[in-house]
Image (cartoon, rainbow, N blue to C red; front, side, top):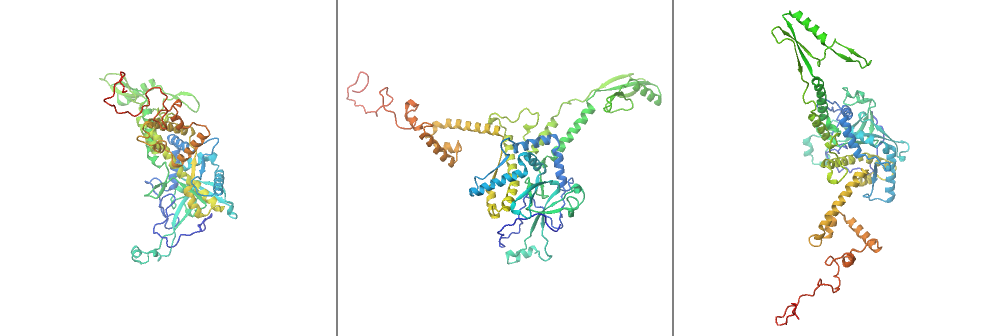
Length: 562
C-alpha cells in the first residue's frame, strides 16, 4: 500500500505559492468525504441500514430487478441512448472550439478510438444502465508504462462495489498545524498551514466482506490496491448527500416508495387468499352429550362430510387429504340441545377484491421518485403521443430535460478519457486542455421520428403566427422583429438566409418578391410595396388630387364641374 499503482499526469505550470486558500479544492463528485487518519477513518451509516457504499450499491442493484423499477429504468436508458443502425449513439461536436483544423481532426480521431475501446456502439445501453443504477462508473485506463506516448491501450470496466474513491489529508508534524487564534493574529496571511489533499482509489478484488465490520469498505482495507487518480476514470451521478458526504444514485429516492409498494402488494395477496373463497359454518346439534363425546361426535360428522382434494404438483396426482386443516376451510361449531338444531350458514368472501387504487397510487409514487412520467406506467390509457406537439404532456417535457441533464453528466466519462489520451500523445498540453474542455460538446442521438414531428409542428405554428401578423408588419411590427422573435433566427442565420435568397433570385430559382408586388398580373396590389401601377383608363381607381370647387362655375347636368 505504500506505492500508488498507475500513473499521474502533472501540469507543467504549477499554481503560484501566492495563490492560497484555506478551502481545499472541490471534489469531483461534489462530496466532502475526507479520511483524516488511516485509510478509512469515516464510517457511513444510512439510517442504520447500510454500513457502507457497497451495501448501498447492492441495494440499488436489487431494486433494479423489481419489474416496475426495471421498466422505468429501461424508459430512461432508451431515452438517453438511442441505437441506430447507421449512426453511433454519441458524436463529438467541436464547432465552438477555437483550434486549428489539424487539432480538431486529431481530437475526432482519438474520440472515435475511445469509442472503439469501449465498444460503445454495442455496449452503450449496458454502460449507461450500470452508471444510472450504481450512481458511479469506474474504468481503468491501461497504458504501456514503457511507451506512454502510445496512449490508452485498453479500458477495463471496474465493478463499482470493488472500488472506493478516497480523499486523504496528508499527515504532517504535530507542531505544523496552527490554532485558529494564531491564524488571525499572524501578520503574514500566507503563513497559514493549508491542508494538502491526496486523492486516490482503492481497489478491493474481493468485496464480499464489504458487509462485515472492517474499516468501512471491503473488510480489511490493507488488502486493497491503491491506484492513482489519473489512471482511473471516475464518473458519478452528481447527487450527493451533503450530511453524510456520500455519492448517491438516481434511484436513491425510490428506496422508500419501492418498499411501500412491495409491502402493500404482499398484504394484498394475503388478504385475497384469506378472504377470496366463501366458507361455510356448520352448527352441529350435540344434544346433551358430555364434552368428550360431543367433541368425538363433531369430529365424526366433520370427517364424514369433509371433502378435501389436494393437487400434488410433484406427481401430478389428485388425492384426498383429510389430515390437515387450513385457514380457508369451513368452520364446525357444536350447538347444545335447546338451540335451533343443525344449521349451515355461508360466510361471504371478501368484498371489493378488485380495488387496487392503493397499488396504483404507490406505482405512480415510484415513477415520480424515478423522474419518469406517470403516464408511462404500463396499462395507462394516455401516454406519449407521436402526433401533434400540442398533445405532448408537460411531464414528457420535464422528462426530456431530465434526460438531457443526465447526458451532460455522463459525458464527463468521455472528457476524462479524451483528456488522458490527448495528453499522453502530446497532442495538447494540460493548459490547452483546460481551455478546450469548456468548448467540447457531445451530441447524443435523438429519437428521429419524434424529433422530426416536433420540429415540423413547431415550424407550422410559427408560420401560422407570422401569417396572422402580416397585416401589422410595417404598422406595428417590423419584419426584423418577426424574424427574430417568431422564427427565432439568429444574426448569423439572418445573414445566411438573406444571402441565399439573393443568390436564388439572381439564378431565377425563386421570383423577386418586389417585382411581384409591383406587377398586378402577378397578384400584386397597390399599397403593398413598390410603385403604383400606371392608369389604364378603366375606372376611377386612381384619381388626381381634388380641386377646390368654384361656386360661380356652371354646373354640368351630370353633377360635375365644367
